[in-house]
Image 1 (spheres, protein in one colour):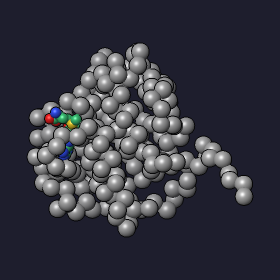
Image 2 (cartoon, rainbow, N blue to C red):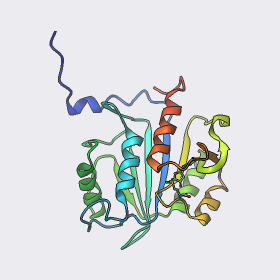
Image 3 (cartoon, rainbow, N blue to C red):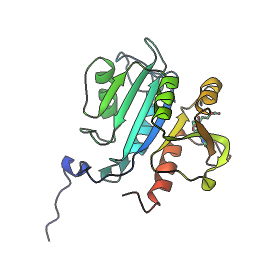
Image 4 (tube, rainbow, N blue to C red):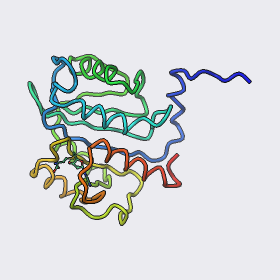
Length: 208
Ligand SMILES: C[S@@+](CC[C@H](N)C(=O)[O-])C[C@H]1O[C@@H](n2cnc3c(N)ncnc32)[C@H](O)[C@@H]1O
């Protein structure tokens, strides 16, 4: 029997039946806010953002259409920048770092990419906006409530820091609107946390 070769189109299934959305908010304290950089690592550790996006969006051979990933960049030259990556409309993406380096450079230089939006907005403004939309917000931190005791609700938002962690003042601000939750006492990479959350949500019968 002949097997069909995977094409780029296999990544883009119909999204009209999705009921629930899952949002991530990643604060990248030093992430560069223009396209003037040599590589993602030197751009205020945008390589960490790339890792989180990979585990946020990709399963083996498909994109998670029910994920919206917000990244707040706080690095030079003109912070803050809020990038939204929307799984419902994200196209022309692969897992390799070079692809994402090109997307970051293009969007941060004033260009566009399907499914990616840039706004001049701070972490606290974004958190307030999500709270206004009555999302269930969960702030990831080692000393939070055990995740196995948490009921996520239908449209959860997960807030996390980059390799340095969330600044105290931003964590305190987010906690006005959400609950601090823990994956255990071991400090994980931010991308590992995103992967664990996606995995736990995959176990729910309601997630497609
Ligand atoms: C690499 S960690 C940052 C570690 C940093 N040393 C700190 O103290 O925040 C990146 C982010 O992942 C999340 N994180 C890491 N381990 C976690 C855990 N065991 N439970 C919940 N969140 C965790 C937190 O949001 C953290 O800001």
